[in-house]
Length: 192
Image 1 (tube, rainbow, N blue to C red):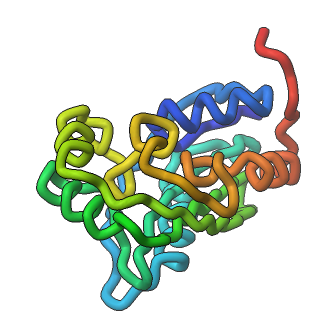
Image 2: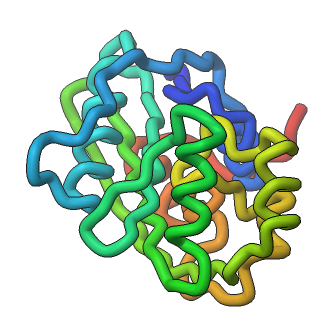
């Protein structure tokens, strides 16, 4: 059995290591991540995780782990900003409000798919112009759903969360451990 991580995210690799699991291969899938017309955030996130898992080439006994993280402001999906201007618009919209961070995890072994979605609530403070411009200049927003990374500089902007911190980072460990165990992946092994 080979464990394939279908993600290029170094944070997901780091989180997986906390379970004592090291992927045998890292094969990020290339799928269309554009939301469908009228698609709501949670079903969108679940669909992407499942599509990513299906898109990774694997043998019948291989286990594929994929995830997708989506930031939702009400019914609005805030994906990865295309540029600093869009990141600024996201951060201003999130400021002073609660929003949801949804992470869907999909584990595939052969034709079998196990899947979970974890929804966490996050409150971001209103950013001053100085904070906003400094954060944008850091580049940390690049490639991050909603334009921020809670585990980085943006942690100073988040006074409150409810839910899974690791889910907000990008891989909810309790749920991921359950799914991997169901697929037969040994957990909690010290790195060799």
